[in-house]
Amino acid sequence: MSPASRLQILMALTISLSVAGFAYAHWSDAVYVRGRVKMGYVEVEVTSQKVLTSKEVGGYSTISAYLSEDGHTLTLTCDNLRPCWFVWVGLVTQNTGTLPAKIKPPSYAFEGDGALRRCFENSTYIYGPYPRSTGFGGLEVWGKVEVGESLHPDGTVGFTTAPTATPFTTDPGEKCVVWICLRVKPEVPPEAMGETVEIAVHLLDEIGV
Image (cartoon, rainbow, N blue to C red; front, side):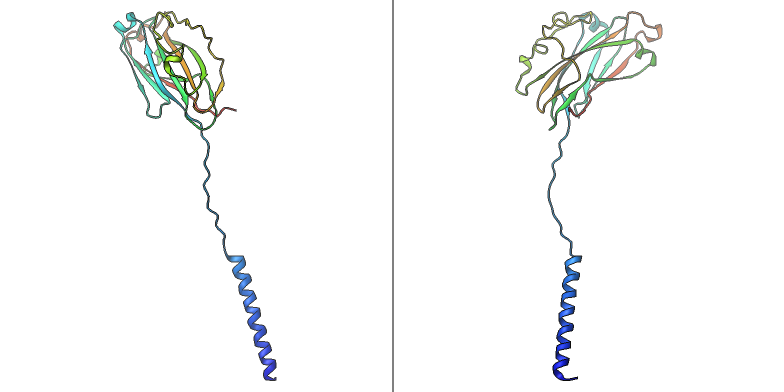
C-alpha cells in the first residue's frame, strides 16, 4: 500500500471518530431549565372576634375564648351550664389567600360530656362580602353590636341587613361577618347541669369557583 493510501485511510478514521464523538456528546448532554412557579392558595382567617352574653348568664357562667395561631379556629370554654344558657360569637373573617374562597357556615366540635352535645342548638348568620377597605365601624352588623340591641337574648337578630345566603364567594382581601348563637335547650338532663364544655368553631377553607 502506498504512503498516500495509508494517509487517506488514517484521515478517514480520524474524521469518523470525530463525528461519532460529536454524536455521542450531542445525545448524552442534558439541558437544565430553571424557573419558579408561584402557586395560588385559599386562606380564610378570623381577624376580629366578639363573645357576648347577657348579664344574667354572665352572673353564673364564665365564658373564655381562644383563637388558634392560624386564625382558623375559635375555642370557647364555658362552665356552669344551665337551661336557656346562651352565648353570641361574632367573627370578622377575611380572605387572605390569593384565590377566591367559598364561604360556608363554620363547623362545630364539642369536647366534654357526651350528654352536653345533645343539649345545644345553634343559629348562624353570615353577612358579606365587604371590600378590603371597609373598617369595622363601617359594618352595620359589627360596630357597636350589643346583646339586647342588635342581638337579642332570645336568639333573634335585629339587623336591617338580611344575612347572605351561603355558600357564596369572596375575592382575595374581602371580609365577611359571622354571628353564631349557641344555646342550651330549655330541658337538659340532670347530669348536664353545671357542667363545663369546650366548643371549637372552625372556619372551612374551600376554593370558590
